[in-house]
Structures are given as C-alpha cells and as structure tokens.
Length: 566
Ligand code: ATP
Ligand code: MG
Image (cartoon, rainbow, N blue to C red; front, side, top):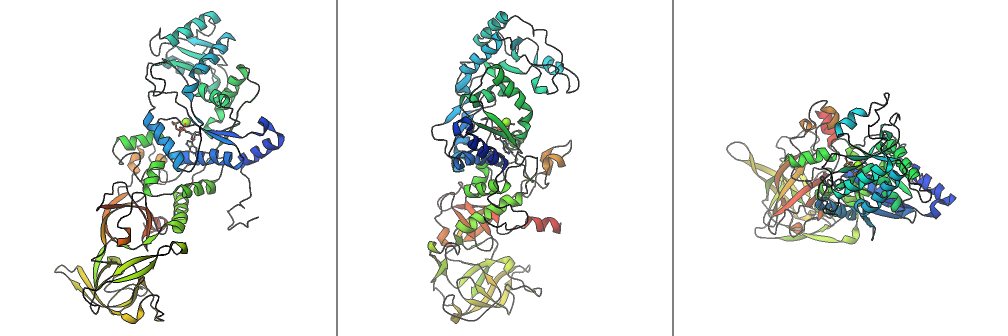
C-alpha cells in the first residue's frame, strides 16, 4: 500500500462509499454482477466543473468495475432545452476522456413508454387528472408541518381520468389547464409525496420529438423510470435528490416493477469557491455580457476551462482528489489550480516569453550576429529533446527583472551586478538609459564569452533571467485571467443583493508579449510553460501572424499571498 504523503491524504487504496457499495453488490451477485451507471444531464445549459465531477464519478466507476455508463439527456422541458446544448455536452464528455459507445439515450426516447406507464397508474387509481391551476396546486400543498388540501378532482372515476388524459395528449385542452398527478399522500411530511404533478400540457416544439407531444412528463416522473428502462443498477446523484428517492421508489412500487430496479445513491455536490455553479447564474453572466460566452476562459464551464488551457487529465486528477463525500463542503479553487499545474508541469513544453519588455543591449557582442542556442523543451520529459533559441546583441527582458536601486536580496539585474541569461551567457549590467520622464528605455550590459551555458564554465551567479532576441521574437497578445469573483462565496456574500456585485473587475487583463520563435507557429489549444511566468495556451482567436495566448494558471499560487497582502 502506498504510504500517505501527508496527514490529510488518504492511502490510495481506501474505497469511497460508492465503491464499498458496489463491491458489496458484486460480492452478493446483485443485478447479476452487472454495474451500470449513467450521466443524466438536462440539455438546458453548458456543463460545468461540478458536472465534470459527476461524469468522472459515473464513468470512472463503470470503468473500474467493468461496467457500462450511459449518456442520457433528461430532455423533459423543451422550452429550456436545445440541440446546441446537446452537442456541447457530448463534446465535453468526450473531451474529458469518456466514451458512452452506442449508449446515447434521451428521456424523450421513452415518452411513449412513460405514457403507457402513466395509464397503468391511472387504471390502478393511483393517478388523476387535476384541473387546479399551478398556483392553486402550490398554495394547496401546505407546509411540512401542515397537511396539504385534497384536490377536488382527486376522486374522479378511473374511466374519466383515462379519457381526459388521452384527450390531454391529443391536444384537446389549452396549455396549463390540466395536469396529471400521482395520488399519494397530501399529509406526507415529505412534500415530494403530496400528489406530485406527473404531466403538464405545454405546446412547445421539442428538439427531438418536434410537435408530436403537447404533454410533457415532469423530471421526477421521467427520471427514475428512465433509469429502470436503461437497466441502470446504481443511480448516482447529488444530495438534493435524497428527498425525491421515496417518490422514485413509490413509482417503481406502484408500477409493480420487482426485478432490475435501479437503486439511487446520493453524494455531496462539488462546490468551488470564487465561482458560481448554478446554470441559471451562468446563463445570466453570458446573457448579460459579463463574460464573453459560455466558453469564456473565466467561466467554470468545461468549455471555459478547456479554452483556458486546463487539461482533461488535470480535471480527472482533481475529481479524484476531491473524493466522494456524504456531506456538503466547499473545495478551494487552489486545489483545482494545483492539479492543472501538476499536469502542465509534466507535459507542457517550455518557451521564453517576455510580458513587460525592456530592451537590453549587449555592448561587446558582435553586431549582426546570431547564435542558435540549445534549450531543453521540458526538463520533466527528457525524451522531448531540445529546441533552438536564437541569441543576438539586442534582447528584451522583463522590466521587473531590473532595478536601478535594488534591495539587499534582489538577485536579478541592477547596475554593476551579474546574472545568467537562461541557456546563454552571464552578463553584467553597465548602465541604464532613460527618457526625459525617467523611464528606462534600454539597459546596457557586457557579456562574458567564456560562460556559455553547457560549455563547462564554473562561474556562478545567483540569478537567471528569461529573455527573447529582439529581432527574432514574435509579438503576441496575452490574456491574463484571474478569478471571476473577489469573494470566496459570491452567492452568500451578496446576501439579499446580487451575486454579480462580487465580480472581479480585474479578472481579465489584455497585454502584449514577445515570445521566442519556436512558439511562433503554434496552433489553437497548444499549451506552454512560459519560463518563470506561468502556463499559457493558444486561444482559438489566434490567426496566422497574430498569436493570442490565454494564461491558464500562474506558475505558483500567488492568490493566497495577494489576499494576505491586501
Ligand atoms: P439544473 O437541475 O438546475 O438544471 P443541474 O446542475 O442539476 O442543474 P443537470 O443537468 O440536472 O443539472 O445535472 C446532471 C447531473 O450532474 C446530475 O446527476 C447532477 O446531480 C450532477 N451535478 C450537477 N451539479 C453538480 C455538482 N456541482 N457536483 C456534482 N454533480 C453535479
Ligand atoms: Mg438537475
């Protein structure tokens, strides 16, 4: 067994509670030893990092236990759903590295069967057509302590219910004029059991069934039966559905389904600080123009973090580290960023790029001369070999790497001091040239030709700087992202106010960078480490001759420090 790395890291062999349940089920031969899960999104928005957790969990368990995992769209509300969302969800699940093979299903595939099942319940006297308005039903439900009122239509004869329900389907009644309700218990302490609505009349064109239906099943009616129809063994969902479970079981009981019943297990949803995850709020950010679309790199959507440069492996790693909890908790964004750094550190090729350039001239270096220096692509992956970085008399370095009047422990460049230019030579600063208003326009240095990197020089200096050659570097746009919100929990911080009040006005800064030429022909999605600066990826807005880089994540976690300094 692997030893724990720290006090709060569990040994990797510890099973989460779902794995324990599955192993027990396998041992006892439940469901013939089958494991079948599903990921059931409603196609009414883009998926976010919380959904990613659910995807990794459902597909992950199926993979681990030789089972299967379906992708099922719970498409029961055509007014909010669309093909755009279906396609985005498909792309996101695939991108995360999971395969549902030919098992792509839709609740709408089951509309006919669900209708038949509803007829079955009506015939048993377990469902009735109710003519109360939505408002009346809501008012009549009571509170957990006070029983609800019985619908005046509750005792309709079966024949009348059958006739009305059939005519509801045929379009005989206006929208909202009638519903089908389960006849359960208006005094139940569980509000979900108080004669819940199963069908509503709604003339809306569905992205799959078109205008075939004008009655649509409610999510609670469709969901459990869909799991049953797909032979799902473990219906894994988030904690808020725990109180729906008795209803799902009631439906299965009253449909007289005995074999192959899905069992539902609930886990705590993933909450992350410094962001919001409700689809409604994300939609509000998109529609209000607070971000540039669902795939804005500041969004917690899967399409956003993909564009930001996060990797599928880092999301899977994050999902693993978060684990499966039974109680609500909030995960620190820093953990997600840590996983991203871990993966990029191993896999992203290094390049040098200067984000805030100041010119550096090596006075004793020959004019019009270029040397091709060897630089390691990735010290974590020696097999990736070397790249060529051109060196010449005029370079750019970071403005912040020079101080005219440095404090004691400043090991970068200042007058009379020496540093190494990465992969190149040791240089000594001779003087800085300023313009009329005192801004430094150029730093003049001399180099020591005997100190070329890799040539056995034993001379040591404390600082090493990244640089680019003025003549050879490529200009690029850089988009520097920060957290979308200033508050750890934007939802709560707002109180009765608006969560958008805690939006971070500095969440996007656009700047320019000079990049070494090896990155010059990179393609959208390519990821790099800008040495000493951070991880960056190429944005799809890039065009030939106009590179756009997104900062994926800084090299170290500077957020905690910044907050402290504030
Ligand atoms: P809504 O129901 O408001 O539209 P939702 O986020 O629940 O939003 P669904 O499409 O119903 O969206 O979610 C699909 C699956 O993802 C569900 O099984 C749900 O439990 C799971 N899920 C949603 N949010 C999270 C989260 N933050 N953490 C883990 N799983 C989640
Ligand atoms: Mg939901």
